[in-house]
Image 1: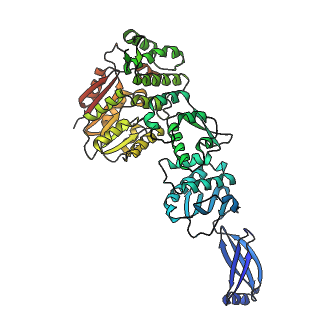
Image 2: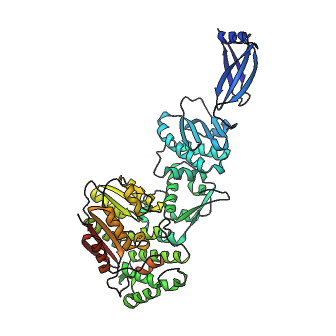
Image 3: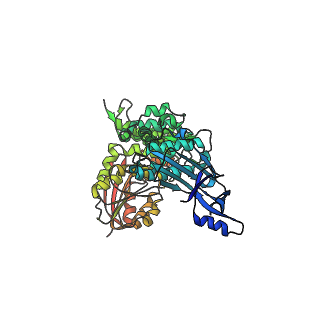
Length: 268
Length: 273
């Protein structure tokens, strides 16, 4: 029975398991330098574990996967930050232009679904296979948001986005879902200004329009002017936040409100 | 108590323009237009606005005040015209004209209906309800297209959206154009009617219809009270109904039908077969 050796990847700390087969030991014996290497690709790199003909470990070397021009910075999100996730078991967010990978997991998984947009990819392992079709759409919109607003990407924003996606996983994307995700993603960083004249006019004729939106509270919109839109949206990804975002977008496309970044430079 | 309606609200708003006239950067002097309106149409002060008239008055006042502050609408940024247009198109007067226009248009089953300069999309939606055919909305400003898209989606109807000027329609639509609807305030405030009559004629299939909703003069010496709002938005003073009809005939249109809900006209014309 072949012996099993465990070692750690010096790049990412992942435990690597190697089975010392007969052919591996023969390769080392036949080698002019008396050692042989076994390549173990994982994440965005490859660990080459060297053994002598007795099965003794003789070092580990890390090389980049072909096509990876620069070293990626991998940011692992601690499990305790992910305790509230219900519909996501693990995730990986790759932002090519920033050379960043964010990843985290809270349990074993078998299947992952991916959404990608212009150099950004999000892989999510869902708790339930039923959510995959919806997640696929939301992930593409989320990748689009990250791609559009790369300047504000941070660990906390990514963790917040993962929690948002976790809540969205069970919701069918509505019309303008892409814009909804952008608003939810930027909700602490964006506010809006009201054009009072247009709002006054809208309040005279717009009752048929506001009736389409369950969260169409113009008083609340007035009260929340100048505050981060997170204030009016509430918990990002909740059904209420989606409906409120849709109402804000309806006002924006009529020029009644205008979104403004709060102290950050956003290509809004 | 007498309640003043759509026309009286337009007149009242036009007279209010005097207070802002120095702030408008316009090609045509609006003072003579306002004088003409005041001399003929000044409403009685004791009468009150109906709810429709209140919407119309507030809409036009909003447009005037924003233009005076430099928010001049353009085709690719309608600015205040989105809410102003949506408000005007929401009135019974406007909707009545739209219904009348659609009732006069007979769209062949394999043709498409196009609304250009779209704002609320009510006209193309009405057309879609009537014919069930292929619908197209056109606007250089993308925001009205979202408004239209939302309305159609909520009704379970499909529509093709073209984010371009009216010239972009022909290449974007694969079916022949059987009906062109030019009914929103963006059309009458931001287009050149004469030029548009030529363009629409070439775009239509033989026997196709164009429906125009716009302010026209009854006579040369009678200014339409909406004209000052067209002028401050960068447009031209209105032609008379007779001049407009003559241009349509000259271009080749026939079977011209007209309906008036003061101060707006609806003109439906058919291209020769």
